[in-house]
Amino acid sequence: MTPLQKRLLDAQAPLPGHRVVFGKERPMPLDCGVDFGPFTIAYQTYGRLNAARSNAIMVCHALTGDQFLIGEHPVTGRPGWWDQMVGPGKPLDTERYFIICSNVLGGCMGTTGPRDTNPATGRPFGLGFPVIMADPDWCGGDYLLQGRNPARGLAVARMAAHITYLSEQALHRKFGRTLQDRKQVTYGFDADFQVESYLRHQGSSFVERFDANSYLYITRAMDYFDLAAEKGGVLANAFRGTPVRFCLFSFTSDWLFPTRESRAVVQALNAAAANVSFVEIESDKGHDAFLLDEPEFEATLRGFLAGSAERRGIA
Image 1 (cartoon, rainbow, N blue to C red):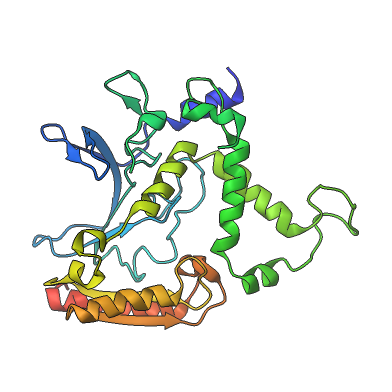
Image 2: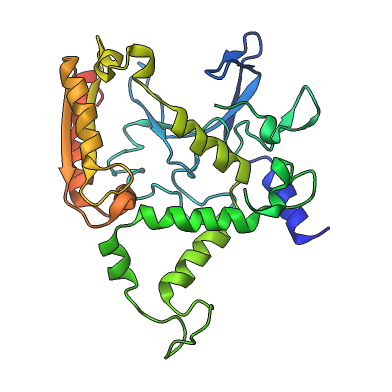
């Protein structure tokens, strides 16, 4: 068995945590016109649910994240992606709150996705997974059956995306034009600069833990999502009558979710007379600022949750 085949098999081994199956009796209707089911959702929980079931907090992971918020990740061996914010005494205090995080549908960490078996065919879904490439090893989405992995294409996609997760200032502060393990440039195409080596590492490590078709489907689902579409094209209509208290954050250097888009959501919430707070945080850490040490973000989130807990009578 080749190392690649072993990785593919290991990636499909059962992961720790919880699973729940939906759509057994009634499949879930999707926007694309397909009734999908049954399907499995994998999730992790942290802390204890109180008797009144009033202390639960649902955390949704980012694009290529997963349900493993804290502790050692079972695949990568690295710390959970939100160790900074979740745990005893932290803003999402596991001694006070019951934290739930599920792996998104279409993902590759235990939730049903493109590499899982389609019960109708007995083969991996591949691109037969319902909606919502230049790498020759992609094989039209059937790379698992071919014993191949589109590592080059997926790595390049990750490298390109990773640049947008940081800001220009953060990249310059972290790397500048520092050379990688050498005293002078080689005038070739090896990784002369530390930033090149860093991005290549991000690309190569990503393909070890993430499925290429999942990447396609999740990003495509984001493209298709339009909250206002079914509400006459008016975003405020989607929030009419909501009892929810909202708190929105933005970071000044975030290229992916700029402040102007957060303000548009805030304006829609205000138009619907919703209870909403908004904070713009000055930061040069880019989109990934919410994963890093940002005292203002941490303090504001802690305060918002404490206020919500008090209103719910959570000790």
